[in-house]
Length: 75
Figure 1 (cartoon, rainbow, N blue to C red):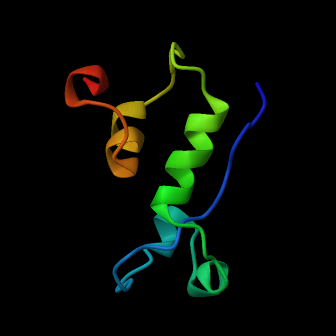
Figure 2: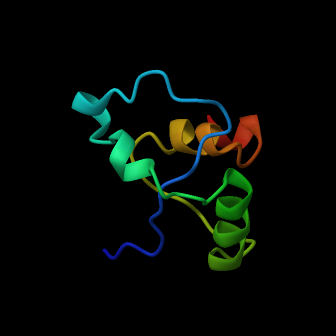
């Protein structure tokens, strides 16, 4: 029940709407963020063993957003 990795990610495209009322994210929060999606991929690969089993609510959406895993595993 501990967070093992948490970060903000700098999107490749300009943000047109932060959807702050849903996301809690603001322009100021992301102003100094330099972490890329590739950085997140590397960090998660270092943290998780090859045989890791992920359990959680709507992980398929999170993994799809991160472009991680294959489509069959995410269903």
